[in-house]
Image 1: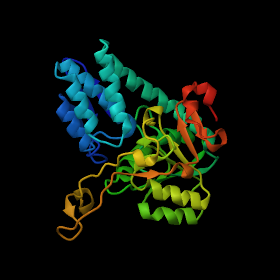
Image 2: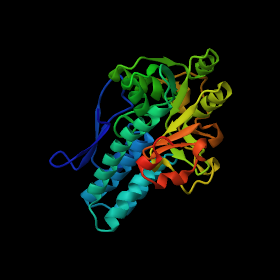
Image 3: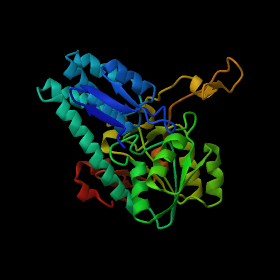
Amino acid sequence: MKALRWLDPPEGPAIALLDQTRLPDEEVTLVCRDVPSLVAAIRSLAVRGAPLLGIAGGYGVALAAALGTDVQAAAEEVIRARPTAVNLGWGARRVLSAYAEGRDPLAEAHAIAAEEDEASGRMGEYGLTLVPDGARVLTHCNTGALAAGGHGTAFALVVAAHRAGRLKHLWVDETRPLLQGARLTAYEARRHGIPYAVLPDNAAGSLFAAGEVDLVVVGADRIARDHSVANKIGTYPLAVLAHHHGVPFVVVAPTSTFDPDARTGGDIPIERRDPAEVTFIGGRRVVPEESPAYNPAFDVTPGHLVTAIVTEQGVITRANGGNLGLLGGTASDNAGQ
């Protein structure tokens, strides 16, 4: 399953996306032949997920270069499309730098995609050390192939645990208001033959209280230097529940998600989305007419609630001082730490 593909001539230059707003009912390919159409797809969540946005950002700049349009302006337009996911700007700026240096922007975009694919496998491998036998795992939002390279981030760990025979059950939060868990994670779990069940977000507490959760694994859209993690709205309450019940709370994200300019979680911009995503479900209004709505796309989980951060370079935990400097080493240096 490819959530994003580059199309060479004669089909392109263009970017082909699996339109995630149409899943799970329809598998529809959306073809973006210019940067404005890609930006619209990003804003509408037709393409989403922090690492995949990094790939999309890179290809967006490469597309501008291939079309002979203003590459700098295109990069800025792509970066503005969504403010919280740091990968989007990271991918766009990396390809923009390649273009400015006279290197092939498309080759750089392809390199980003290949690196994220490889990172997925490494994160699954390193994170597997944190999964007990017979684990009942709870996850939030969608972190699989629809959101990243390879099998994803947190979902790559779920897939690795399933293949190793360690996963007993996957609990999938709905992830309101846009139901990325119910629509997308359940879709991917079913394709992998993973035993799962979807639950309302507000039912998670009862699962913890009943002792039905052994591990929480989530992705991230931006990680600050103090290990605060911005992720899909509803992640922070899960971290609080996990802490209260003594359940490990693990974040899985590539190093491209770390923001060295964000000193604390307070430095992370939080995207506010259209209130209609809350007030309407399936095109039907579910609140009294003209009701206001609060619709942040993300929340921030403080670093002290995070048990471990799994990256493609290893595992960061309190046991190793939670040192982000570890990420300067090699994967083999940091594996299992």
